[in-house]
Length: 166
Ligand SMILES: Cc1cc2nc3c(=O)[nH]c(=O)nc-3n(C[C@H](O)[C@H](O)[C@H](O)COP(=O)(O)O)c2cc1C
Image (cartoon, rainbow, N blue to C red; front, side, top):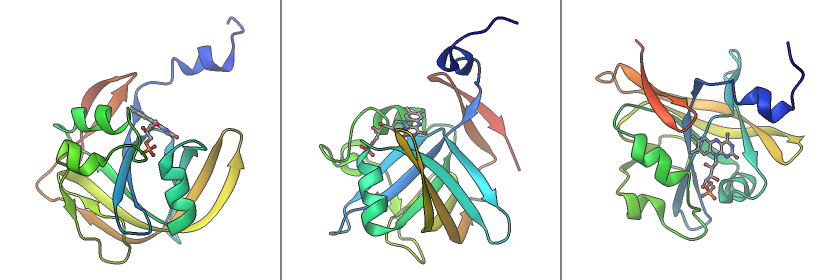
């Protein structure tokens, strides 16, 4: 074993799952960003955690609106992940520019994403300061699946692979 920096060790973390987080501003305009730092945090009650950098527009929108949607992207959404992760909702309307298909959620204002295998509607339950990120804990108030999709994407350091699931 060789001692290295944290970032050097983390280059070996892949594959990593990736989720897309949708949010809205006070006028209902949606934003979306990919996140790899995401996990199931509790089964009962159902809680999902995401770690979001302070500079992300998503960070501001979650703080302000206290709601977000977590989606699991499916094969074919590779370019959507790259695009939504390379620009900010502060500067562009990512839904409009990329032609992402939004669906109305049941309990929250941020939209669901069509073509995703899973959509989780979350209400902000709490947050934890985590250095240059904030860990947002969302209570899942509604969960949806697309029964015709049976695969999701894994991130291999910028390249994507398909993982077959239920
Ligand atoms: C595959 C991938 C995973 C990412 N994971 C995270 C993450 O876990 N947390 C984070 O804060 N940013 C992450 N990012 C960066 C944000 O998605 C990116 O900064 C995005 O443009 C922020 O958009 P916004 O300003 O509209 O919120 C990731 C980007 C990519 C492409």
